[in-house]
Length: 213
Length: 359
Image (cartoon, rainbow over all chains, first blue to last red; front, side, top):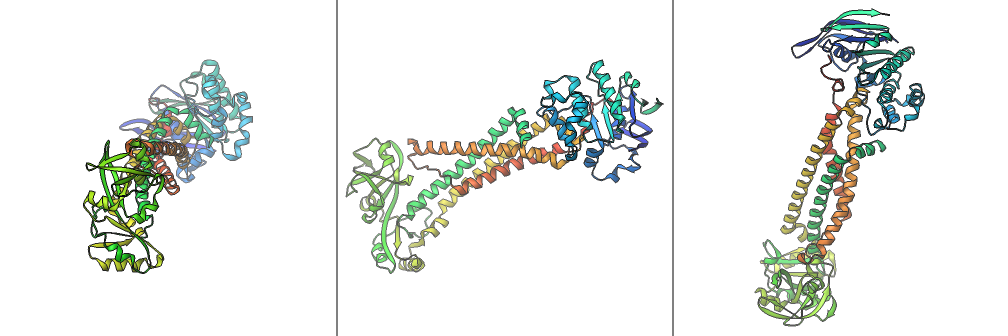
């Protein structure tokens, strides 16, 4: 699935946070959006991921504007995964149940293999407060990946992790992108540059530089 | 089913508050409805004992104020289809130390409707006591009514609280006590099919009297309507208080669990799914609260029934129909109270999960 953003502009009240952003994300591409706080990277991520409607411009998935995809909840469930800075696992569900909550019925059988790939297969029956921060984030990644989304959006996914765990998360993104899932990650962390295929540098709501590796 | 239970367990403090709020509301509905139904059914049962037709003074608001000429019973007794006519005086008076006691002056033919457990039926200057008041007064040999002493001739047992907590005496003595001939006539028929004819004949006999079939009397009796309406109004208030309690508590719950609903939205769960999840949580609470409220209400009614203070006059009754009605009301209360917060939860913007200020 190719995602294209054309002439995106966005305002919070009178404050303009995106100014004419044009980008394309290809299948299996690992894209890092980097920039200082206030540069517009989170807003761009939110718009690309369908969570936020741009004030101007449009986002197309496979050439089709979002309105053309019908029910947005359904579209999200089938095509998009999210990983947030805070894992946002539901505390009263086990890690496995958290993943199952997001799973479409025909993907339920993939929960265990996926947990195994992420190295958390033995933690399925535990609750989020019974595992480490890195393990929680892996469970959150599993939840994002369970339906084989075409693209996973991650907002500062390593913001609460130590360096070792942060690198582990980037490695996972890079590995899973080889299966065809695109990853779009907004991050302050410069180490992400070692793993991403494309680095989009944002400054004052403008794409300052795009680097392909 | 398991997931809502887990959610309730995780949020057990607020779940407990919602549960208590619902239990109190449902118990209030149960109690007020049961007491009203009990009062109405006790009085109805009393009137229905050997009474297919009831005759009162025309246009009176309450049978206690009714005064009709007892001599009419002789004429009515000769009417075709009439099996038996009894005259009753319904009154109330203080019996030390009780502030008010139901006094029933009955014609001799009606004594047989009271099951004697001790002594004999009263003669002139005597009374018999219901077992409840007999115990409450600690087995007295005499009682004073309007400064006049009456010998206690016997004790009877009645399932009707008003009677079991009351005093029965001959109608002549009661007439002297309350200065009236009779309050009501109770007429039993040989053939119920003739009730309309007999009612018509009695109404034609004396314009100051009004005859009705007992069922029709009960349906139209103003006191019952007042009791029922009052109970419905109080039950409706309890229902509204219950809904408001649930709305406010569920709003807090939704606010506490904002991230949970945001994540559900972000992973594509539909608004309907989120609403159903929250509704099922309160549905579970409402079922538990209903069962507890039912048990508590039965216990409270039992306590009231045996409390000396109430003399057995408040005898609540929870019928199967009432159970069903209150259960439905409980479910509606839970669903109505949860709907708004659930809709709000289903519309939580997943954007709220993305840290603010990181544009």
